[in-house]
Length: 340
Image 1 (cartoon, rainbow, N blue to C red):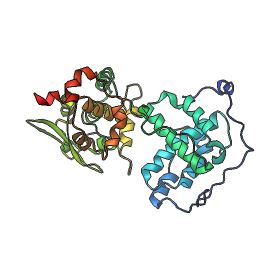
Image 2: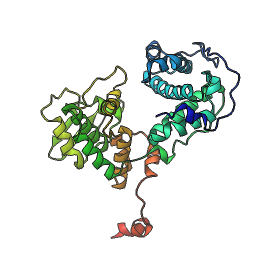
Image 3: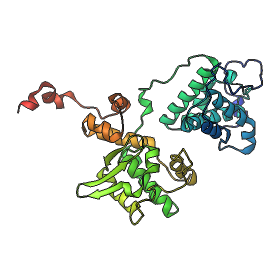
């Protein structure tokens, strides 16, 4: 992922660094706010270790944990998101620009932008967007500045897969090197692209949540947005074959789920089998939502089956819908279609 140090020394340097300082964050917070994370979140932060060489983590681990502690996240999921973003950023800083790991020094727009260009450009648009937002929030927290942020409605936050992509993912799923991974890859595709489930919803879905009747296949979604979602017919065979002869109480997507972070089991699929293409659950969901919009599904119904609360949530997806010619819809827009 990272270029050699010799190559990086040739790159343009950002603004000069202030005098070096030793990291000294207090658990009460550098901004004077005395809010602290709940004990369970503090344990998540203290026990976090990034997937980098042990010697590297020894150099940056305290900085990463202290920065997120100072931010005082209130849930374990939010803490993990900020830990992951900060760890990536700190690892890059330590390996390249050799900046002193002091939050008021390093959380600056110039460095964040350079990091996004040099490290994150190879990742999905959604991942880039989320990482930028989290690092900018860290910058605002430690420097009391307001960095320029991506617009929440920016279309780059939604990047559906093409039909060719999905065909490629099907082939990859069939090539996985054992039965459990093949099943997991097919379940991810079917529940993501066929029912629009979020990563956490796929991770917690059980075999018994999938029902088959004369009208087709439906998936019962539990959790924060409980609902019943009809499965797109394109993915019926994929899902039913993956769940055949398995106990109803068994998780549809098999694997270990860390407490408080069930979606980790979804990410593990790509880590365990890095030579195969593993789709993003977020982009599969986006693909499904855009498909429903293009098919003309009424907005109130789409909000319900997608587990969304507000029509404004659909704005990024509307931006990547198929474009239509007014000539083809003139009778509808003028009312003549209804007069027949």
